[in-house]
Amino acid sequence: MAIHTDHPGLEVCVLVVGQPLPEHEDESAASDTKTTTKYVEARAGCEFTIGYKFLHPFPITQDVRVSFSLDGTIVEKICYFKGDLRSRSFRVMEGIKTRHDKQWFEQAFHFGDLNIGKWKSRP
Image (tube, rainbow, N blue to C red):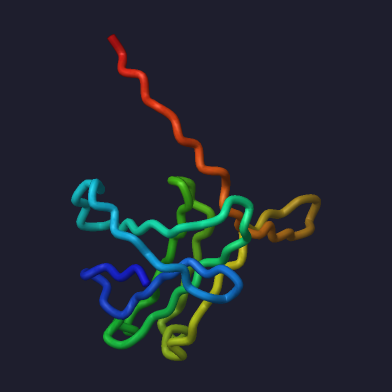
């Protein structure tokens, strides 16, 4: 589970068929005190979900706003009132929610193909 030292008790993981995927550190990641970056091994096209929970010692004295981004794009923003955090239950985000013609849809997350190529330097 991805854990940030500024937010002990907040745990996040990527799940496939309900099981968390093993995580790998990004040794080349820039040192950013507000971000935790982890990588998972995945099969292209495979469906996944994002699991998260607020455990002790995460403070439950204030409301919490959560933003999820995948590949740099925000896919969900959720606000939890402090009373909702007391259950400390495991939550799962299963996909992107969109609205079309007054009807809501949810599209599952899928791993994309891995594109490997050489970068060309500019002259």
